[in-house]
Length: 406
Image (cartoon, rainbow, N blue to C red):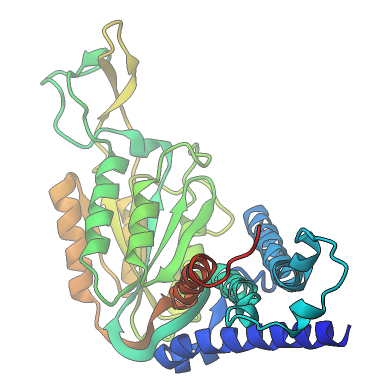
């Protein structure tokens, strides 16, 4: 029994020593990174008002974390089964005396019979830690950038479904047909906004969409890929498009930049209609913007003339258009922009809309703000590689050194 306890202690110490030696290379490779590493599978705090997606992700991370803890707790049992526990599974032969065997010489491989279990135990610990996916901030310097805080306010009312190109025919009216897709106002606005965002470098950009109500699509951010993706997926009909609440939309945009530290703050309003809904009047929203130092630039899409609107398709699948009239209020947009120090524009085609957006930037001054440039580095390969080496070494030890009979 005493010999068995000594053997078990040597197995435990050997496993810890092997694990420590395997961790030497990762520590030397990323010594500073390990001190600030974060585990991606750790659930972390859930927050006061989590969404359904956040709660589901937290549950999944918690389950994954529990599985890793269970794997670590199972390592001692696995090592025992491969070392001391293996003796009980070895076939035995009864003999009248074992004195000659005890006194006989022992081979040099005998002390190595527990080495495969030691190597596998250390490999399992490293693999479990690697599955926890440790990460570290590779670079987190504060960089001083120059830019503008801009919130783009996009109209999603029903009038944005009007065609924004030349009429199909000189007398196009009810029942007019077209053999090609004709871009609508929302299509053109999305294309121009995507190109506008792609050309920005250091401007924080946010997006607010509105119709009968106003919603924040994204707060001001430097993540242009996210903004581009969100704008590209905008579709009419996702919100109630029966009314146009310009005052609510401008007030929501002003609220998003109210606490901004930028000297230049601007709201770019793209709309093709008149305000006929909302809790906040456009005039009061302009007053709030003036109070907060936010300039409002308005872009009126269309000039109030009759436009083609697709009303369906014919028997051959071709779109059918009808002429409709949507009222505009250029005086209101001009008043809002001039009161806040901005400017009003009118765009009747894609080229005019692009020119309006670039003219708005020419009127804005630059300001400095800090942006953190940080990239995350995965550290799990540094743990996974030693684990694979230990597993390969275990296989070599079994084949070349440790031989059991039968």
